Amino acid sequence: MNGAQALMTTLLGSGVDVCFTNPGTSEMHFVAALDAVPEMRAVLGLFEGVVTGAADGYGRMAGRPAATLLHLGPGLGNGIANLHNARRARTPLVNIVGDHATTHRHLDPPLASDIESLARPVSTWVRTSATTDALAGDTADAVAGALGPPSGVATLVVPADLSWQEAGEPAPRRPLAHRREVDDDAVAGAAKALRSGEPAALLMGGSALGERGLMAASRVAGAAGAKLLCETFPAVLRRGAGLPAVERLGYLAEFTIAQLQGIRHLVLVDTPAPVSFFAYPGLPGSLVPEGCEVQVLAEADEDAPGALEALADALGAGADGAALQPARRPERPTGALDAQTAAAAIGALLPEGAVVSDEANTSGIFIPGSTDGAPRHDWLCLTGGAIGQGMPVATGAALACPGRRVLSLEADGSAMYTLQALWTQAREGLDVTTVIFANHSYAILELELSRVGAAAAGPRAQGMLRIDRPDLDFVALARGMGVPATRATTAEEFTAQLERALGEAGPALVEAVVA
Ligand SMILES: Cc1ncc(C[n+]2csc(CCOP(=O)(O)OP(=O)(O)O)c2C)c(N)n1
Image (cartoon, rainbow, N blue to C red):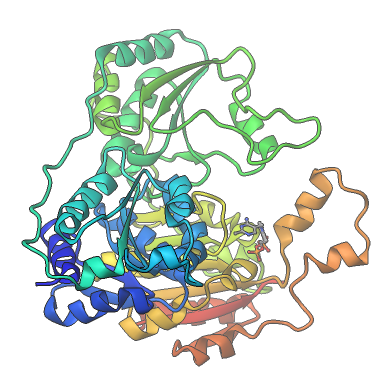
């Protein structure tokens, strides 16, 4: 067994059996090892942003890491934006980066760079393996590092000679660490705040947003009259009929300020206190209202659902919580195709158990409202704000959730960052339905231009925020990557095309012309 085979066998033994790759010469022994270790599912991405984003989507939905395989510093660099999003999502992810052989690095060949320095800002764990004997153990440690808690990106740098030299045995799986139980003081502090009779809210994120956490939160809300809020861009939010309605904080600071207005007690559950995405003239950076007391119920490495249950018990909450979301769907829309009618079509058709990767940006503002009473589903957001996440995340989520339909909601500008994900979806036969919202602009930036107080925009500035001249043809682009595609220009066309695409095995794309 060589080092590459020992690494791969150790990954499998540690529960990692999917690897998203974009390899180079320094990783050839890993590629060769795939035939010796057939249980490892290897998935090729044609750009590293697809590889890292897919590993993020996989880890969010599987709750255990996938591995990546990236080529030296430049390959890692190409994948960093989506590792940044994975870091914000706290996704467990084993990020394997090949390096030059230890005997070769001192020559400073063209592809050499400081890989650890690139990896550190997006990783919770970084190690460069030093010897072939250490490689399997380092791999098992990397999986443990990815799982945490808190979970995150564990980057293992592997010099090429370690993978071709003879290795000993694969390393055993490391013992699983568990999230800490929250201490009684945190529960008592939150209970006291919620009993004050003053306006209060629970602000939830991360691991609080599964069914168990949400049902406990609804008991808390029922007993204390507290508002249920969650972070703007959750990694995975469970939603739909029969679950409590949770209001996501708005992206725009003004919206968040309005949502939190009058709140005197804010209880944080696995999420930081809210801040504005950017600084704007005349607006505060921290969005905690003045005079509002903040209590931390659970941190990132603590058992948030357990903490919410303990809080509900401490408040003497009954088994039934606040009102749950009734089952409801919008009518099929007719007429012009715009953000509102597109949202109605999605609400009318969203399949039970769907996984929604949401990077619809400004075109998506009505979709949460049109789907809140749909059958249960999961909602995956742009956690770190680095666009080009949605299509790779959809790809990885589909691999993690066979049998479930993935709906990839994409704004046209964001789609163009990592459009190659479509090719991977076609090659792997993944049940991903993509909707491209073609508004031919960077619409959010058109809005931001005025919000930051920039000078009145002339035609040259406006030209930087339009993505027309030429218009992008997503039907041709998708077909060119093996994904069947159609274009809709009316609400009726969109509804019919989306229904057909959702019913098809494998990927399909609908371009929705919304402006
Ligand atoms: C990696 C990265 N590059 C650039 C940006 C800045 N940015 C934010 S939104 C945006 C354009 C969004 O356009 P689109 O995806 O079409 O959505 P729309 O605003 O039109 O709804 C850009 C370039 C970013 N957030 N992340």
